[in-house]
Structures are given as structure tokens and as C-alpha cells.
Image 1 (tube, helix red, strand yellow):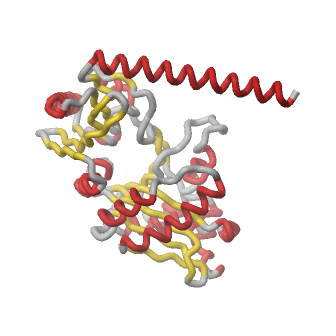
Image 2 (spheres, rainbow, N blue to C red):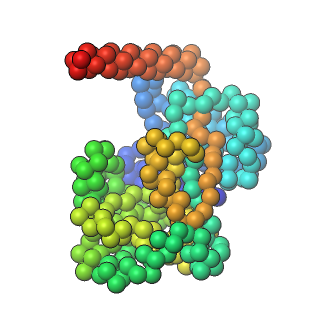
Length: 329
């Protein structure tokens, strides 16, 4: 499975954002690398990449990336090889990364744990694997006046943005920037690499979701609903429609895009994860995000600075907690 984050269309999207992108193919590997910058300076980032057929291919990709990093003055290389790409286990890929000199990154950038639905079974089998509530909503939602439409017109991204703003204000979270999603719509929707799904109540939009397609996988990316109509639970049959449409298109996998770790009910994604698991499927783990230092002294200084900053943050949080407790007492 090759992620859409390693596709030519994603490369064009990144270029449209004004980023410098490099695409390389070798005998058994390929990668899309983006030149990013942080406090330490420039670095190369391969979202869900590089892609390789085996350990030797991964090593070849890392060597190629090191050459590119030297040419671009990058301080380090950030990689996220997806183990499912070559059938290797997380442990074996992680061991290969260690041997190549990589270190676990301070945090994962893309989800290291996700939920995949296999689209190869028959449609009835896919529906049978879902929770009964999902099946019933899928079959009866039209009786409530709800219908679903799709669009590849970039202008329609405004529907999703409107609901994202409402959800952000209600839930106090920061959504993806409007400019980012508008650029994604312009770059990916006309070609069909991204599709907007809209839930309509009596022909008026009450929710929307954006899906990204690669050669074999549809990824559930951004979604929001009007809370005024939350009792309709329109988001559930909308996802069922997205899954069945992906199967009809000939795709073999539906990626729910990120779930919480097992047995962690306090994780910020716990509620979303329960929702995603209700459509059938199975959890898949990836090796996570790793850094390959190119300029080791600079990378070591960067690591120490991050640890110091985190420690200061913990101390400040502790002081604030003590001050609140004293005020309340």
C-alpha cells in the first residue's frame, strides 16, 4: 500500500503551497521528500515514506536521501516508512531504521496507528461487518429527508470549511487552515484525487467530508457536521457511502486515518476511534516517525534544546497548578 502522501498529485499540492518537493525513484524504492524548516534549520520530510520493497530497498532510499540532504544543506531527514507497504513487521522495519542510524523523532507527525477496512469482500459482507446501527442508518436515512452528493468542484470546499469553523468554535480546537484546504481542493479535486461528500437535509447541506484517493486506497481525511442536526447521525451513513463508493471505484482499502492506542480512554482520539471502528476493519500499526541526523552536532543540540523546553513547560504547568490550588483554598 502506497500512501497518497507519496503520490504525484500530493507533490503538486505541496508545490502549490510554495514548498520545495523532491521525487526520486530507484530500482526498488521511491520517495517524495519535502524541504521543511524548523528552529534547527532545513530538513527533509518524507510523509509515510520512503516506499521500498525490502530492507535493502529501504537502505538504498535512505542513502539517496542523505545525498539529497547534503545537496540541500538539510540538518536531518525525517522518515515514516509504512510497514504495510512491503509486508514487513513494525519491529523489523524499526530494527532496520536503528541499524541505518535513525532515531525515534520527538513525536509522530502522521498517525502511527490507524484503522483499515478491507474493501475486497462483497458489499453485503462489508455491511455485515459494521455495527447494526450503521447498517440501519445507511438503509433508512433517506426516510428522514437526508441525501448525499459528491463534488469535484474546488469551490464546494467552502461547505466543509463552514462546518469546520462551527465545530472548532463549539469544541475549542484549531482546524486545518482555510488556505491549506482551499489549495488542496484546487490541486486535488478536479483530477478526482480528492472528493467532497456532502450530507443534505431537504437539499440544504448539513455536513461534509473530504476523502483522498491513491491508486488502491481511499483515506477519510476531514469531516464536520452541523450540530443542529446531530440527532440525525448523518455522519455515519455518509461514511458508509464513502466506503461503498470506494469499493465500486475498484479501490481495495479504506483508511480511517488515525486511532488512539488500545486501552487509553483518556486519549484525545478515543471518541473518534470508537466511531471509526464501528465500520468494521482492523487496526494497523506503523513504525512511526524517525529522524536520520545528517549534521549530528546540530541535531544533538536540537534534541537537547527540545528536552529543556519540555522540562520548562512541565515546571510552569506544575507552578500554575499549585497557584490555582492555593487560590481555591
